[in-house]
Length: 218
Image (tube, rainbow, N blue to C red; front, top):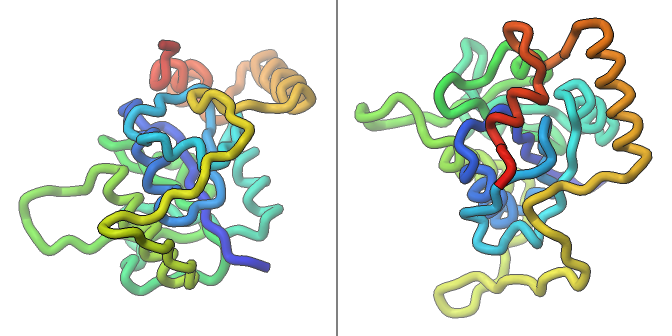
């Protein structure tokens, strides 16, 4: 089975970072960018690269994890934890999904629960405590591509050759879903609401509300 990489986007506070993440994902051979929460996103910063990337949506981290495990995929949290391994050690075994933390607070306890292991990026200067989430993603994805042996893209002059855009284009500010999937997830959310429980909520606030505030309609 071919080695693949995924990026899981959840609880990213700065809207334009999703578009920049998409750009890095296409550059480093990511198979899919997985949105958890709201389906719409800001493509600013992607410079058109989002049209070359597959998007998938889940309403909860649990659903995202189940999908990745069906793909026999490890989930790697990018966070400085006690048991985190340096990214330079390439501690990978198979296809891997990378979950990056919120720009200010890092990975939440709920996010850490779905991770199989953690990596951190060594720093050698003393001027900052952490990296921008998109910078961190680029470094981690590049290291994974080196470990996985992804083929380097051909170059033309001082640029890499961009592939032709897919013939069938859809708006790249919205992650589409099948009707059956939408009905299934709406039913699940109604059941959760009737029980007064939202799996990914904090302090009694539902995950859908949190993501609505992070990615408001334009």
